[in-house]
Image 1 (tube, protein in one colour):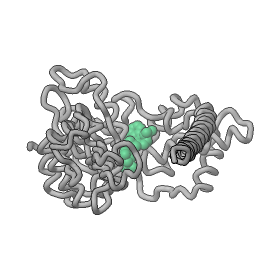
Image 2 (cartoon, helix red, strand yellow):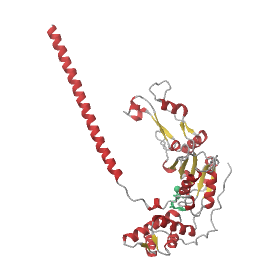
Image 3 (cartoon, rainbow, N blue to C red):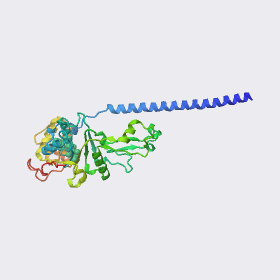
Image 4 (cartoon, rainbow, N blue to C red):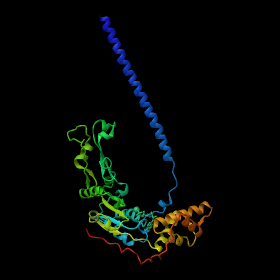
Length: 359
Ligand SMILES: Nc1ncnc2c1ncn2[C@@H]1O[C@H](COP(=O)(O)OP(=O)(O)OP(=O)(O)O)[C@@H](O)[C@H]1O
Ligand SMILES: [Mg+2]
């Protein structure tokens, strides 16, 4: 009997031992395979990071200082005064495409950071977001503008998911905390997002909720508890830019912002933009190229693009200097429209001067 018991015990011990031995072997093989795979992926990522193309001309010619923004003196003045000093305001910039709205906001921010009493720190954020892609899905699983919560049911096997802990994901409004949120094409923002944004502007923080959050759950890390109890910080100034007319922007947004108008560019403005872009990008141009480019471009972005195409064409064909014929060919090949109407003179802006509307 005792021999039989000893035999059963031995057999059980062998079976349990084999079970654990096999399990340990499988697990270590799995983790070895995972380590190998992660090493290969890390090498691929590093190889990608070692590849750099040259800086695009659009980047090189980007205005770096307020004085580089051409033809928008009133708009710049209005924008600077709205953001200047101790009490910067929210701003809406109206204007046609490609006339310097985004470029101006960037350089003005650099300047107002140095204004007396400004609440913006030296490293204050300037977060650019495109309202057209700031849509959230209906149930709010992902909201790149406001922020969202990843509930455990969707997190799967991650550490937080397994422990049933909801994970807050900050959005652009929190990344802009302490600085500027530049929302391009603000007119494209869906109504639901506009309402959420207005609430954040009011509260200066984002409140997140989750059915999975419970105060009593001791597993919830302190910072997640803090987020659910006190919200995520989102104290920023909004600069919304739009190519739409003011009456097509929701009144609720308009009434909270100083409204600033950027002008269509005159022919003389575009000639200057081409001159300065050519200098910044080290492109030599023949006499008459600037005027020809101005004849074919309705805004600054088009002018810079056409200068780049003309310069590439000249380089490809071995010419160091861009000729009028190069620019004309590039304009016609690219189906740029030649302006029929006479260009405005410097003092004949279509849109009225920029105004500051009191809150
Ligand atoms: N007024 C300007 N002065 C100098 N450069 C300009 C001006 N307007 C446009 N540019 C050139 O065109 C580029 C694009 O301009 P920007 O992105 O600021 O236009 P935008 O008004 O924001 O256009 P969109 O409405 O399409 O967003 C700039 O980086 C700059 O090179
Ligand atoms: Mg823009």
